[in-house]
Image (cartoon, rainbow, N blue to C red):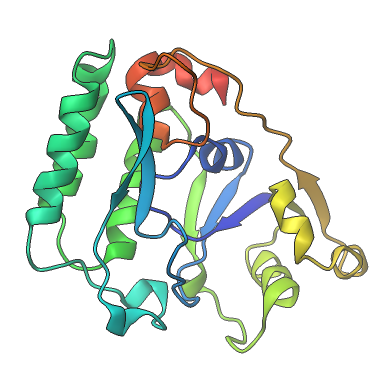
Length: 225
């Protein structure tokens, strides 16, 4: 069983979906601490040939909260701003009309927790990309919540009967590779490079939200992944 694990980011980047596509199960790491500056509440799109962050406001009082406990702002101004910004900058893209409605409707109508919005958006985008992986949440797994880093990952993998862990290369910085070996779990590194694709920009911009790829390339986006 191939498993990927990642925090539920807001409108994640392309590499995020590449991992899901290669996984039988994708586990949302939702019961770990929120870190300001990560991509839990923000991601980048292309505006006027430059990258621009769409950011969901998170109160400072939630700086040390678990990801799955952070509420969305009651004020809907951020929703209107995100929808307007996305619409203004992507409405002329070939596949905007076809693929934007479920994404924008989700942003507009979802209330409650940021984590739930992110997970719902990820599932919607996976459906648009015809990705049929099974989704689970780490908060639903019965493991010792005091475990950190590699030990936590291994316990989560065992909980869902994972035999292979799909991981990005960036994780090598903090993962104990030997501990995976001794636990009998293989690591498959996700060798994914963001090569130029059709984009509404004079100069290609890497590391944007998946919606940039999707609105410009439609169903062909899955082949890119």
